[in-house]
Image 1: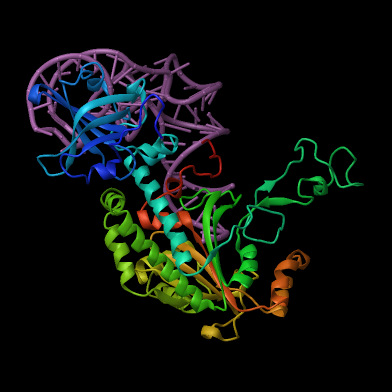
Image 2: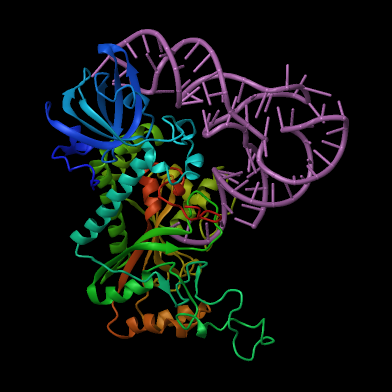
Length: 489
RNA sequence: UCCCCGAUAGCUCAAUGGUAGAGCGGCCGGCUGUUAACCGGCAGGUUAUCGGUUCGAGUCCUAUUCGGGGAGCCA
């Protein structure tokens, strides 16, 4: 932590601790300058706002012109110069802590300050995305980073306290059965001259690539979901979850999609859809409570500068249970709204998936709170979702035990379901959807040997970050966003 | 991938087809226990790229690249 030329100081305080230290405490603070303001009072002095990322606020150091290096060094400091400040904690006229500096050592200057991109002023997020290596230095991205960390820790704590086991599911998968969108290929073959399936093409080019010669001996990709793998551990450890990176090669250009994002996927045995929904609700409320209490400083910033009133809105979500709404009833509500004059771009019809505008209407206009939509038509959902009995929720067709949690401002934040635990029904669904049943051999084995009802869901970590911070673009809640045409850093 | 909008100083933005401007930031000076400080001055430009129209293009047209908003796909 300390360079060899600088002996460790017994008084080294983080900014967060220095801001709470009693008056008179001798401290050394190490960090970066946010701003420097000069005054001619008391024979000349400079106010240095120093931050080190340990909390939202900077601490003010007062450097008098009597310091030996004042004119040469201190008075020429600019934004984000790295400094070490020795001094004594004092109270400002307004009440907070500041440091009466006895020494200011310059660790690293900012060269060419008139071209340093991060200035003490509001920057557009678009600009900061192009300066992703520097944006952590801003108020907003410092706050995002702290909340992101806080939330990551909270998620593990939530599950750990409830006897869930954290399972590391693979990043690389050679099974093509996850079925959740376009995948990134993983290969060590020579792209310019790949081996071809023997007897195909003209021997030099053409014909299918022979993946038998590839690293894993078969086609392999980056995972799009850890669910199928984590189900295997669920059938032995009862309550498990994954929390890892997930990859989708879709050409999505929106403020809500990334090519590389983090997903949390719990899976619970001896559980049905209601248990799943209850877990999802507990989970979301736990995340809200945690960031409000542990990152009050950063949340205050988001409340004032990013989304006015977000603290009150999140607080209100804690107050009442989530609303549970069968898909069939949601269709009814939407059709009633249309009948009374509400216009939508897309038609509403039982059997088709809800559009973004429909989800937003339900959660933002009609109910104005998080809504758990349940029991969707089987045709629009994945093969592994449990087939409901005929007539569930008075639906005109067969439904599956799926649920989506919709929140205002984001839309779908969680997608989950009770899983089909009956082998014969699962096989029927796989065949109906034209999927290669042989590929699912190990997944089907779980139903052959001691199958039990179970359920789970996936929560997009970055979507949760957006919901909790009010940040409008998913690319601004992950340090280095990966999206189409975007992998510079 | 589709629809719409945009790209001018370090940043945020102006500029009827006719000499390239302001605020902030930087530098210099003044003032001040300052804290989005304030006041005066100075420096800072291949107007995204390639073509075209025109006496003349930041401005109009073609194409491209990149960015933003919305949609689809989803988490």
